[in-house]
Length: 180
Image (cartoon, rainbow, N blue to C red; front, side, top):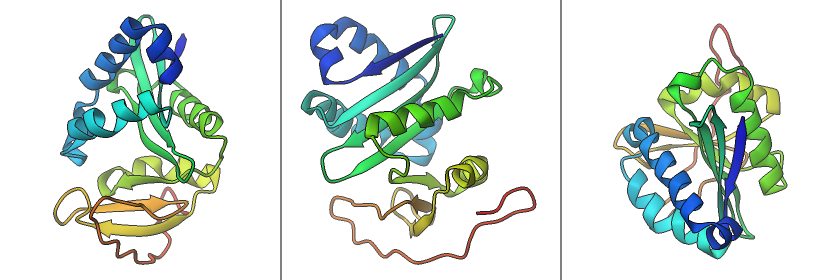
């Protein structure tokens, strides 16, 4: 097990390692591109400059030399946000891996209730962990990232470039296995 944090310091001290970690993340982000069509643009134009400016970090978990999961966080002094969390398919059954990434994100952000959002089709997969941490749904945004698809915000409202937010309160999500 190896945990690496890609941030401003690691970019300076070990640029080759940082480049390798970023490459691993991009290779394994394919499922995120389906929910976030501008994912690569966001990485190039927000995440990488944010790493350099000290406003973002990428937290990684490796198992046997392979990327098992990652989280991308943002703390720009105004917003503390867990931007992205992904456990790689082959490591989905590794007990506690996702929880460790959440915990590392909380530590990096110095917050147990960071802003985050989740695509409608992934909401059921996160329901149990959101309930465990007491995350509160704040708003839903239809069409924010994809036409006619909903993104759910927790622990605050999303801020976006040239996006008119029309948050609407939603009844608590529930299904037969989860409720929050």
